[in-house]
Every structure is written in structure tokens, then in C-alpha cells.
Length: 159
Image (cartoon, rainbow, N blue to C red; front, top):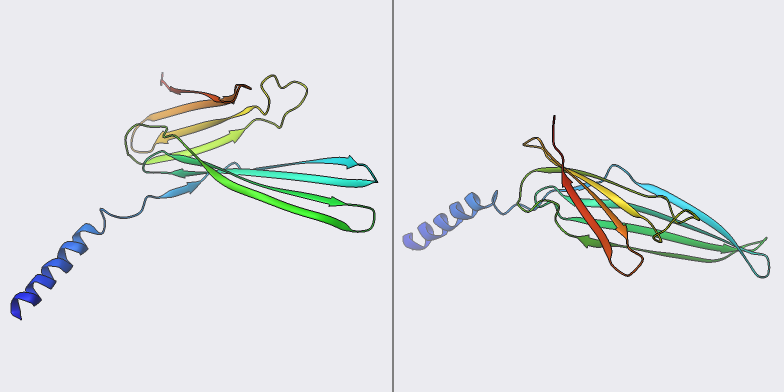
């Protein structure tokens, strides 16, 4: 019985020692959330308003991130709301830095498509920094209009 107690005690001590190493990654929400809305007229005097908002969720340990978007479409006539639809989700994006570390992050997006938009919906920029060193990486991601996004990241130099 004494051996069983010692074995259980040793297992408990080893699990306690491993707990900090097995902690979950830290996540941070980007500081730039935006919302854009548009209105449209439909046949029969129906009005439709569509609003979209996005944010980014960043893993401060691995530099992986997710682009999250939520949208709401509201259709009404002159007297009542006819239809409300909502949709949303997060899409995983690749790491910004190759190694794990302690990072900070922010992102912003271009304006919605307009007559000046060559490449469809535009793109977004991502900035990440290693908070333990003077290391900053800026990335621009744009839609090519041909199915895949084009992404380029640059390490900043300090003068």
C-alpha cells in the first residue's frame, strides 16, 4: 500500500511540474474592428441593408491568426421587417513568424469594393512584433481576382 501511495504522490508532483509547460496558447483580439453597411432597393419597394464586421484573433505564442467575420442582412418594406439573416465564422491563416515566441499583433482592411478597385474586394494588412526583441514584420495580403490571395511580408529595418 505504501508503494501505491508513493507512486500516486510521484505522479501528482510530476503532473504539477508539467502544468505550466502544457498551458494553452494566449490569444489576442486585434485592435481594429470595422463595420461597413450597404443598402439596396429591391422590386416591390423592399429595402435591404447588409452590414459586415470583421476582426482578427491572434495566437501570441505561434503567430498564427484567424480572420473572423460576421454579417447581417435585413430586408423590410414600409411597414415591417420581412427577413433577417446572419452569418459568420473564422478562417485560419498561416503563421507570420516561423518560430514560437511572444508576439503582439494588429490588422486592418481596405475599404469595400468600389469603382476604383482593380482586384475585387481589396485586401488587408497585418503587423506583428516580437515583444521580446526589436523585430517587426509587416504583411500585405490582396485578392488577385483569380482565386488565390497574394501575400508578402517584410521584416522592418531600424535606422
